[in-house]
Length: 192
Image 1: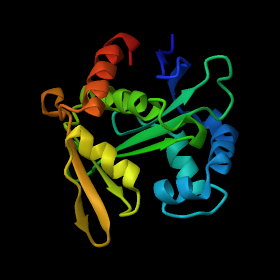
Image 2: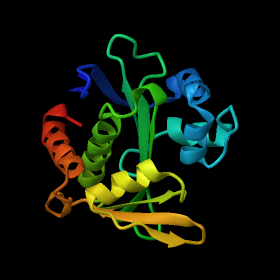
Image 3: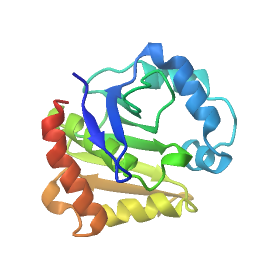
Image 4: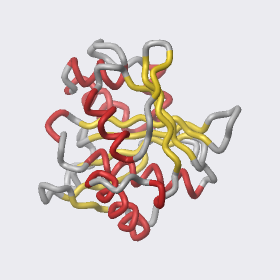
């Protein structure tokens, strides 16, 4: 059974790992993103997702790289509310790069936090102890979000790089940190 979570707006979401069968749904989800969302997540405003990126998302290797979807439970073949992935660092296998994409219409509903809880749970199970990510300097929403979790982004070569230890005790005592802690407790029941 695939896990269900409830968003802050009361909507239920189905969490599941992407597979090659999701190719068209991911293409459509990418097309539906605003140019600003595409730019902040993919650092480009192109309207079509490159096949190289799509293939990486759709061919998971559990424990090494996984991409998770948050979808409407009654429409699992539709683009859904968002997706998030982690990619284990080959040189430092205790670390993984993460990315989170939330559909424009699902911003501020808790989708990102639900997806982060799924990634965190799966990554910890695989022995990963730290997430890191790259954020554009004008992506204020993402920078604020990772800071509120306890990360300290550093400006490096024109982009921010953040690190976040996968230790609940080190999450910052903020509303965002508290929401992630609550989602992590829920994730224990999700059977990821």
